Length: 364
Image 1 (cartoon, rainbow, N blue to C red):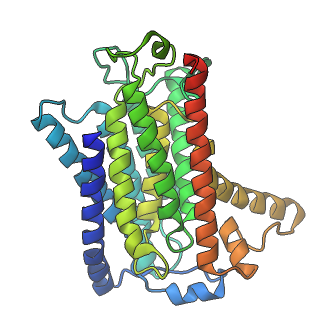
Image 2 (image 1 turned 90 degrees about the horizontal axis):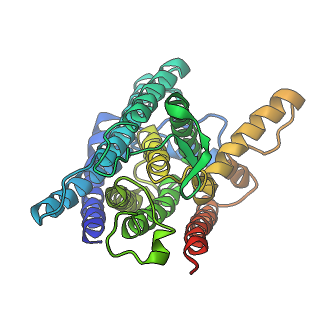
């Protein structure tokens, strides 16, 4: 638990202190946000707000985790694990793709950055290399960071895809979740605040898996029935805690009225992070509940496009979903807070389902 707290506190401090520096630097360089021409009218006032602020979250996550890991190593614990390096790689790699996208938007003064092909190739390379790496690095218990089976709260044996199928699945999950968070990042503080809920849930899940790992010597006979075969759950919880602290520190400056935007740098990184957490903690299907708000935002875009192309009518005033309520007359802060509440309820429900499954196995 000490490692998790150190990671969160250090990352929070780094993010809340480093973000103002980024605001000054990006403002001086003219790294301002471009706004959709067809968006809500009041969003036009946000044009020029510094973007690429997701870099602060990524840096805070790295510093928070490395400091916590260093403290653990200095007190006799192990150093960074393979699962941690893979998750950091996935998050940072997706952040780099987002950074390039943001940078091109700024340089070309438009709301379109990398062309679809280059963005797709960047996301694909990072996701596939993560998927391949997650099947290597066996530990003393012969566990790899990921398994080839689809999971709910643990592996579903009859849904095993094999090595190639798993790598393809990892690519699909990373692409889906990174784009889902990207769609959600349309209001001040919405994506960062919603990510805090999801990451907080994964801190709890990772710590619970660590306390109930199948090799833990203090497990009771009943608890063994519900133990978890996750390779490095404490490290995963520490990274989630570091990213959570980074998001909260960033949110201090990103809440309405935002002084900086996370941009694709942050949204793609956070999407990759939660996808990676779901894969490495064996909770891919449960994430659909935990991150329910992101799912709804993505579905609203898919429905809008599908119905418009087939019937030439719009289901929503505008997609993603949060803009529909803005155009319906809701204040931006009202949409943000209510969507935060939805995100919190989804995360709480997901955590409840996770715990309920453990109780059903242990007879609790």
